[in-house]
Image (cartoon, rainbow over the protein chains, first blue to last red):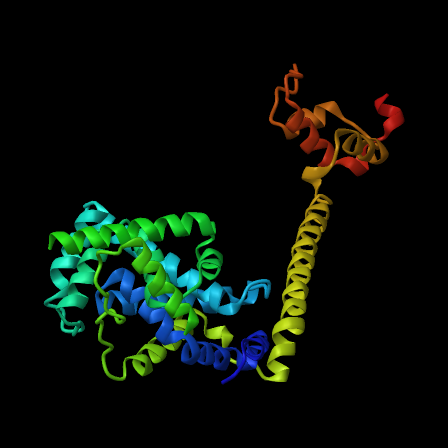
Length: 180
Length: 161
């Protein structure tokens, strides 16, 4: 597997720039897709957001400073693109975000790209009742196994705020499971 | 692995009533999705930025050095041609002004004075079809000028004065 440092060097050279992007896609596409998909839920939407994410990476990687890890920077772009997408969806349908997520909750079970069991379906529906930041924090902590300081660098939020977000998210999921 | 254990311990601590949650989210990935996705991304990039294709050595030098120099030289040539045309037009005007319409009054006066030999007012009046018995001197400057120019060799300035 090519290191991030090597990828960045390849990207700086116009002759190997495209090859560098392919290497980034090969290395990070699955993790980025999963992160995006958990936020936007539907595969078609996740595909749009992931492509937009890689286009943004292509345009912005020249300005990436190696102060942070490459994955942190990629993940941040994917997070922001997901939230932007959901906000645009809300505007497009002139509904509140809660309505958008309520609609997604109803569509998950019928989605051919969801083959989870009853418990997985219930968890996804519970997550869709949470505010975005809590849902995002929960996904990154529980499904991506990230440490709080890693999440903090990606979302540019303090560890304390993240711990609070996660705590509230888990309590709401617990209540949802108790009621459904 | 330690991190995963810590996460599950933390979960239990926050929500003791919550039974074990599934480890996976249940979302399915379509077959060969990433191959298709990568092609689409690269195609979109090519459509928006065709110049990002790898450049040869000479193409690079052309783009970065000679092309800007050529553009600058073209601007200079155009500016030079414009100035040259303007100056030529001015010269043409000056040449045209050698014609009589550009002569000043004092220049005409000097010419007439130099060439004035004889002036016969009767003859002048008859030329103008005026009453020679009682010539009326109510002729205009144009008539006078015309007569003087036609007969300039015959006029004697001293006799006139």
